[in-house]
Length: 269
Image 1: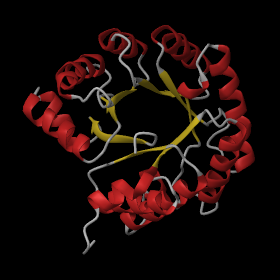
Image 2: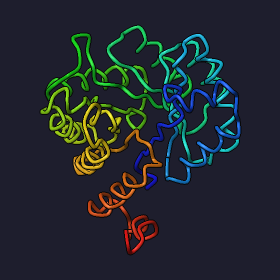
Image 3: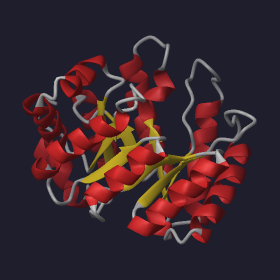
């Protein structure tokens, strides 16, 4: 499954339990989180320490310095930060490590320019969230128009297409019951226009403020995969979600010789 990006979302200080780990500088607990996500098949780990702006950079460096020795060489790091200071220090620490991605640029022109300059300098990937100053996009056409602008900016900055990641911005089903379909249509069109550009999304947003969130997450995951998405930001330790991912990729012909499905799914499910 190395061609598919499974980005683990658990190293996030907006999760109260993880914030306590970082605040206490508990390296053992932090490494347990890393190993759990790697065992669950994460190809990248998203690191977000922005819960406290005053300590964000210091906490990010603590996390990065602690986890680097425990990361497999093929597991990338996604730096999830809006702080220029945090990005600069973290990218310097990573020193061009393969698989590094910055999350994310959006409609903020000044931040986008700064991030793209850093990404070009360090030769890392960039996630562009399809949003605008007018607010969250509703239709596929709105998202595609924003994608055209984002693609042009990244290309102009020297970011190779294979290091460009477009996030169609999954909004909660409760916010607009029609927009999940628009997301699926957007992904299909983006894959058609730019086969080398990656599409990815934060899955759990779809179920926010809804009952049985895991059911919605699993169902939408299968639909996103069928639409051609290249990656997801998820909790890889969710076992039912993992099974849905494996089954969906097997059914879509994305699992060579059904290796992943047959090695992880037992006869009784």
